[in-house]
Image (tube, rainbow over the protein chains, first blue to last red):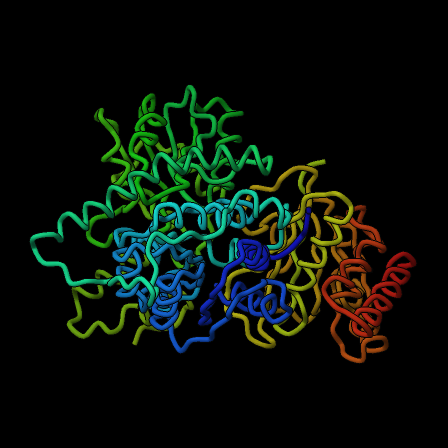
Length: 411
Length: 185
């Protein structure tokens, strides 16, 4: 059924259609609307046999999800930003124990400086914690990915993060096609746990493992993620046949057939990138797009194939590996067999808009550096750097930058 | 049809974001694609707030803020002295201002030659029907009268999706009165 609703609400409805049995909720912007809406749906009795548990922190949210999942319940939670960091220890436990929890991450920057707006720093910081990470381009894809995520998680006994851009998607009203309960039931079988805490058949989940077996247990975690590289495209095909639209998969390509330059990106910015590429193509530029739909496991073969003809790769990323440059671009380089220049463009940090005008300038540039910060106020940062050279007590950087931005005299 | 872009300016507490959302619902009800989203800045009661809506016949992929609007809805005329509300307005674009004064009285006469202009005393209309000076729904009624993007029926239905009962009915009545006012303007 077509609806014009907020992204958060669309995800909440889709999660409800997946028949979760435990939802643990702790609010943090820009995720809060999702669990609020789920709380209402559970309260109305619209989610069947589901317990909605208010917890006291994100660490508790993930811990309750771990307990619920180990007891055989389909478990869901959502978070963002500092909330994801606060549950970091439990994230490794969920994946290390092989518990198929599904979590939405409404992507948001990480402080300091405190900032509540969108970028990908939160989920990128947890890229190696053993969770599968899927990135949504639109609200339609966000809701569809949740339906796929439960099935994937439960088949592999691994947790899945569905990453969607905070505010840009979570707070946007746009058209979505909400599937029916029958469609979701036909695609997503009931949860058959591979392990369960059952007093009748006791097992230990979370046994201490010494050097004699730790490598083997970790190898299995890796092997299961690599299995996902086979399952994800297969089930995306099945999803297309069942629901009549594309969602998920490992990568999406757009106009790359004869492209000299390929722009790699993930999440909602792909829409703006495609519009920019269409404009540049109409003026004769040979440029295309590679969207990464699955970031973990890293779809190395699919990325390699998509970039096979590229003469230049530009990775547009909403995150920054401080002291290195790009995170996604570092991954992209592992997929390239040839010596092709890979340029990192760091964009959209802390919610800065990414515009077609700025993207066109960068994509058309013949002289890109290894790492470029889109729309960086270079005179301002140079001024602050010069001040730091001059003054030992140069003061807090955030305050200095803000005073300059607002035309106030330096302290 | 190419994309039609609307930018709504107001102050925190005036329902600016809700207005953009309702406008997108109204367009959706007419079979169009629509996208509504807030500007991403600090929202405090009384602080300048911006929200956006795009309407198109095809899927809308673009996620940048609306920088070259086809129409502006200004929910609070005191913003005219604080924010460059007219920035980027497309030639021949539409300006709808919530005020009981005219463009001449606001010192904006020269804009009348370049743009399609309209004023609606939306706060007063809302006060009369809703009991609070919340101009957002009334302004959408005014917008329906002066643009070809949405009908009053669709605006009324959108109000009914966001509000219920007496509040919905009162806001719908405000939208209808503003619609008539804008038609006569």
